Image 1 (cartoon, rainbow, N blue to C red):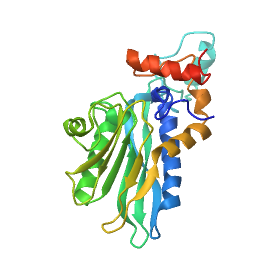
Image 2: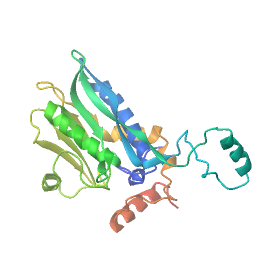
Image 3: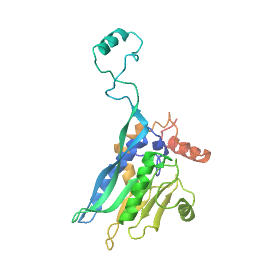
Image 4: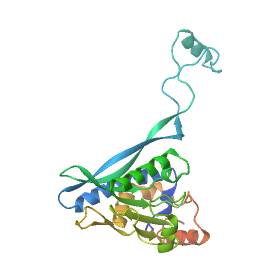
Length: 267
């Protein structure tokens, strides 16, 4: 079932839903790239790894001291386990590494990184977070290494993150909800941007390759549509039970609800 919206679906920005959408978009974007890349190039995926202290779980193994036995119906059995020297699972939370996928276009002749393609995540736009620090470090590496960089920001929340300065984006694109930023190797301070407003279809994006090689064109809306349809987001969005996060403006909410009602997604 296709998305009811002409472009980005703001219901997919919810924190519990966006990671799945992010990963799916990367996968389908890789497939779209490999369908059009010229001979000698291939799109691959990799993962950036960092630790997010807010994403915590109970560890598999821990040690409880003699004065830390729980109280309850199982206390006697647990005391016997501890008395026999068995290890118990601790309750302290620990943080697992987070793996964040992104795309690379490489030259097959020398395995050289030509272009990096990033779909910006919530962690990349969280001020002070390890995910943002890691992302910004990678941005600097691309710039210093002469690598093309394509950034797709489909999140309204959080501070500005892509390579283009926020003031320059607003100066050329006005106020926008989302955007695409392209940084060309050899011109690390020249940016090309596609500002996207909520009511806009997602744009046609030229993906730069080596100097003298024509960029390949990716219809981002088609990639989004495939991700939405094959990822089951028509059901996961829960339009009649959830609201977008962050909230839409009053005008945007009225527009969105009008579309959802017209498409039979709201009563």
